[in-house]
Length: 106
Image 1 (cartoon, rainbow, N blue to C red):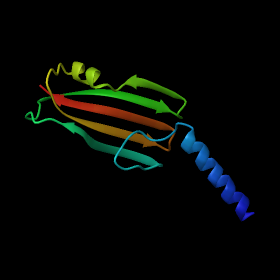
Image 2 (cartoon, one colour; image 1 turned 60 degrees about the vertical axis):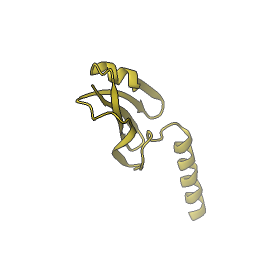
Image 3 (cartoon, rainbow, N blue to C red; image 1 turned 90 degrees about the vertical axis):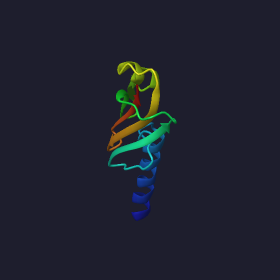
């Protein structure tokens, strides 16, 4: 009985891990809940005064939508010179995931 339960658990974990329901890119992961902000890229320019966002989200790894490109985030805030880029990742029970790129500049 214990072996069957263990095999069922391993099978479920394999199914979840290969179904596309994995959390977005982040320096640390929490499979129940994740709320992480992390650095992506920096330039030698002084810190910018404007900030633009671009977001993508996924539902059950089946449906995904959004535009989390640097171009979209920079255009949103009228940034012509990027100074640094951060990212924000949020996941709830591997059912909902959201990845946001934060672009700073002038």
